[in-house]
Image (tube, rainbow, N blue to C red; front, side, top):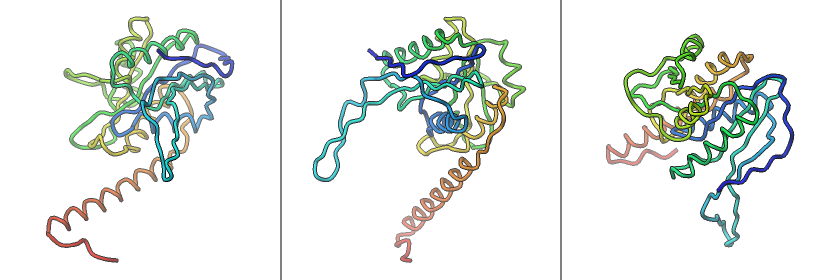
Length: 244
């Protein structure tokens, strides 16, 4: 069971659109939504409290710290935009459905007209491609015009970022998912998040904002990858990497 706490009233001038996603491979969704909310000065107005994590943390001295995870609803009222983000993507199907239903219930209360989720698409070669899938064929033209490439063949989009599209369709709510191309799911992928945001801003008809910070994070990531590669090659040769 999940509890909802509303902190403030929200008033939109028209029917809002909603961007809803939870952390996934490479934390593409987490990075993207956090950056979007920050740049648009989104205001948190409600939270969902979940039964997670099932543990406490401690530091030196044995002092325990506990922080309950939550899912958050943000509003950008002047842009008629609703944002839903959170700390984790439930692995348990029952919890996953509960979170999806809660997000869609809020979408219903706010009379949302379209919903978008974002995430990662694992590919062999990393580029700047953004793939898309939709629960209504009428959305395809809008997605491709913004620069997304529709997914081809057959496959699955797992977790919250995919499931919410199917559940939205049951409620007659148009929904689409934007997926940034990545090659490694185990490291952060700011480049993919940036590619998605560039497409998403076109779809939402919002002004492009500065994404230099995401570029800086991508350069730091590449530097760390180069250092790890150097160390691995040095170890393969059987000698120490050297002393500076």
